[in-house]
Image (tube, rainbow, N blue to C red; front, top):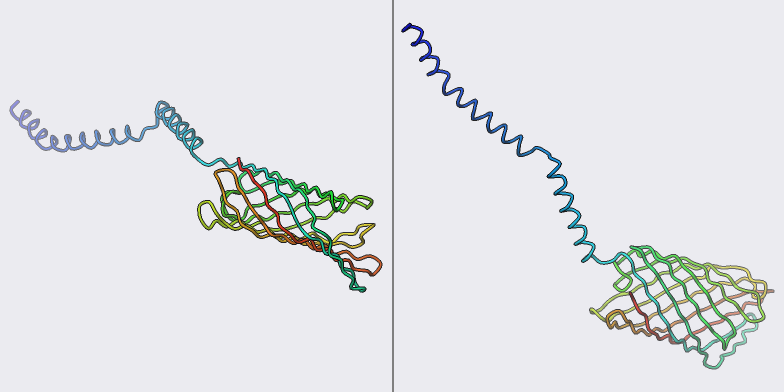
Length: 248
């Protein structure tokens, strides 16, 4: 009997520390599993937190959509020259009105333009697809490439349709004031009354912003070359464009 008690005592003395250590390690392992355990309650709570974060970002992040409308007044001279006769005629001062509207989603945009020129008896309607390659807003420093179609309706002549490509640049010098420029190439096409026609347009000027309202002024030059029956006609319109543009 004494021998049995001695064996039990020795076994407890030897195995006791090992059992306590094993129990401690097992408890730590269990706690680790509990800490990393995924539960439905935690998933629902995380989902609610993500939804609140999305709502907050949606309220305070800039809108990916931009819209603008503009109207302007054009005052210019028209110079017409023909070759090979080399005759030239400089007309009196002309005036015209122009309006445009645009809509952007992220970096892609659509733009429409209309110019009414009653004195020279034509009007232009144009539409383009725009891509902003530099900048994060239209009312900001940017470089926008565009491609579209212009339809010129002339009194007593066949309608002139020309595809065009170009670039529009805005550069802010201060928070409210900056420079703007545009260059556009009208691709060669054939017209029954004018013959083979091509053209270019260049604009450069200044702008100042008053919140969403912009006041701008540009100098512009539009040159159109047409050739029919070996006679080349050059029409150069040069003048000033001033107007207002509203962003929303």
